[in-house]
Image (cartoon, rainbow, N blue to C red; front, side, top):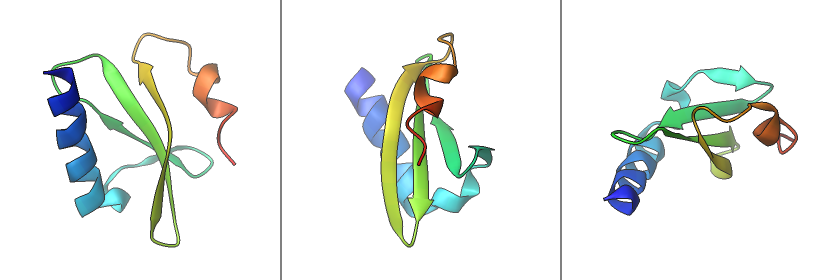
Length: 68
């Protein structure tokens, strides 16, 4: 179930990565439906780079250090 929800989120992300607001520098976030996880990513020059998949209740500072 979880992997299917992640695949759905990534499919949505591939269709329109700019639909998600910037949160920190150029990092954006997509929520995983039915699970309390988020995928943080950067979209630059047509390339989507996943930075992290974090539990929504976890401290945000953990993924911010990964943003280029």
